[in-house]
Length: 165
Image (cartoon, one colour):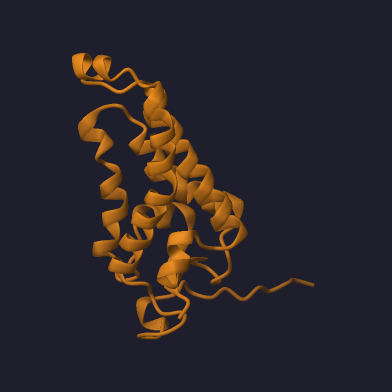
């Protein structure tokens, strides 16, 4: 006896409602949610580190100590992975009425998916070469050219961002 499993084709943009719950999140909603998450994580983590940074050395060398960029990035990474796995959204997503969903079935991302989705931009941002460091922008801006508004990080994690209201 052989088992048959039904395979559904991946969703297309026209499979989502044009507005309201479960419609695709706008790029503006996604950007605003990301900015809120940066304010909640990276800004406070950086502010805590400022007293430990020798500003004269930064002025002389033009470089921040490695920990001054690594710790805020790590705080953001843990925040995003934990909240996406646990709730399917971050604080920024919640405020904007959007959530991150598995592309295949619309459920919350798994830990692995949330990790891959978050590690792609974080790993690029961690490269200490200024031109490459700005490469994380490309990861997010991939959503501009995709009908499902999926950035490269969404492809890496197998996710899509949809509205909750």
